[in-house]
Structures are given as C-alpha cells and as structure tokens.
Length: 319
Image (cartoon, rainbow, N blue to C red; front, side, top):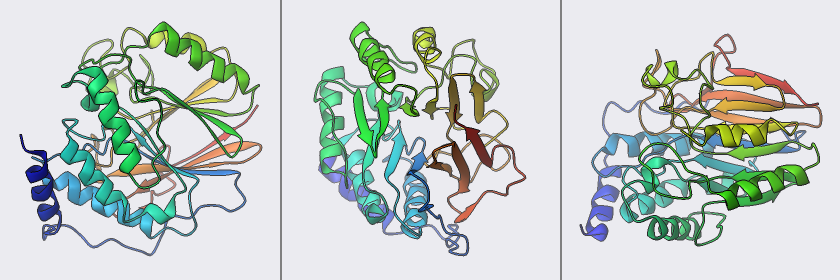
C-alpha cells in the first residue's frame, strides 16, 4: 500500500469539508486559567482513518476549537488510538491537523492505543510512533524501543504508559515497565501525579456498561488491570486518565477510588456512545495547589458543556 499516495488522498479530502459540517462557534472559547499551576487539554481517540474521512473533518474542527483558545496550555495529551490502522499516512495527516493549533500548547504528549499497535510488528510500530512524535508539532519523544515515558511538567510527574507487546484490544505490562511505573509514583512523594494509559481499569468508569455490557474485562486493560491497580492504590493524589471507551461525558466519567482518581475522556475522532453521540468531546484540566478541576468541552460546538450535565465540571480536592 503506497503511503505517499494515501497521504495525498487524505490531504485532498480534508480540503473539501462536507456541507453538513456546522461552522464552529467562537462565543465560548476554551480558556486556560493563569492562576492555575498547570493547564492540560485531554483528547481521547483521534483515530485518523484513510477510509473514514469524516473523522478527519471532525478532528479539524476540534483542532480549530483549540486554536481559538485564550492562553496556552502546558500540554495537549492524546490518549491513544491516534491512527485507525497505525499507518504512516494517518500519522502524517494527524501532524497536519495539529499544526493548526500548535501555538496553543507548549508540548504534545501521546500514548498508544490498541489501534496503534495491533496490526503491526511491535518494535517496528514503536519506532514509527516515535517518528510521528519527532515530526509532530511540539511532540515529546521517548525511548525508541518503548512506549513508556516519565516526564516532568512544571514540577508535576507525568507517566505515559503503553503496552509492552502487540495486543488486539487490551494491554500487557512487563515487569520492567511496572517497576519504573511504581518508582516514578514513589518519587513524587504525594504530590499529584498524572498517569496516562489508553484503556481504563477493569470495572472502572462504568465498565462493563460503558463497553455496551460485553464481557467482564473488555474495554479495560485486561488481565494486567489488577497489577496497575495494586500499584495505584499505594500512592496519594494519583490521577489515572484514559480513553478507549468512546462514551460521551457521563455519570461514570470520573470515579474517586481513594488514593487514585479515574477520569475517562471521550473520543474526538469516532462518534461517542450516548445521547450526544455526534459531538466530539474533551476535557480541560486545571491544577491548583489544593484541587484539580476538569471541565468537559463540546469541541464541534466550540463551547463548554452545560454545568448541569453529569461530570461536566469536576472538582477534586487534593490530600
């Protein structure tokens, strides 16, 4: 499959937006609080696809919504499933889309999802992912042989997890990644830590209901879920942030599990399940000394979600 030809075809398609695409409102722009110690934009599942062009058109609007923001975020975080088939042409198209809003974030942080890894030889795909980050606007790269990254952003620890082998839907975490994961949590000494992984934990964020009720583990990390959970439960002020579920902002989007808090972020590429399924949604996260605030955003409408909606605004006190 000629990736250059596919890339050029995707570029051409994006130049011709469908008539059904409603112009983006600028009446309620994204605002990054200057009083916050940290501001993040969280996007789940872009899933750019060469055979589903509507996703690219939607993501173009999502990027424009960020481009209209007031202020600059410390990071834009993409929570896996960046590309539907893990293809070079899809990653290159994503780079083009992100260039529209690249002056609105200081760094781009990305983790892989099952769609990024499942159809390719593992090590080859890791290196392709790192090449994408090298070429992406303000992309932050990790080890060429691993998805794991531990970053410090304005004094806060960010842990970016990724499967240690190709799996179709879940994720696998080897001994070394788990060791480094716990080491990074311990080193934070109780200061808020942000852990990013594509899949949520088993029986968390409404599973199995939020995976349409199918299977006891589907929609989650899978069999290694208990390993991550056992580590997370040891440390205070840990925020476990995931995508994968493709479910709109809902009563299960945030769950407080004591030491760790679980936030599930809707998709910005594919349609989300739920009543407002045609709306790509995201979260804007602001971190203060005593609390973390997450606000849901209707990206295609260019506005924050009505505060009456479940988990439209989440305020989490810090211990």
